[in-house]
Length: 113
Image (tube, rainbow, N blue to C red):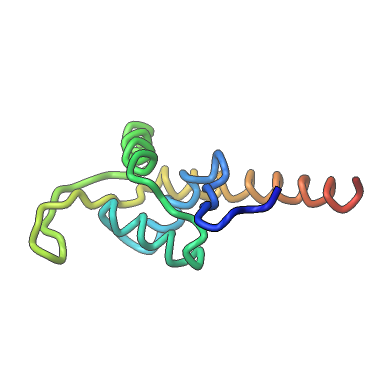
């Protein structure tokens, strides 16, 4: 069945880390900025919910893929800014490679099945 009006597309499982890492490759951002950037770059197809973004960022901090620092935001509120680490850059390369391999495999199945 197709999408009904008002239904939203979800970020495919396993790709949120990659999308966050890629977004942070451009420079440090706060969580809301990361979510907005992904939503904008995807032509508003991929909404990033706070309920999945912040737990993912926390896991990424624990893995050492990002670092975080509290700073004033554009509207002078305190916001936690996240920055990609060297380990995060390596992980982004791994995530992109894995994603590409999976998409190619799915495409082969769809084209031959």
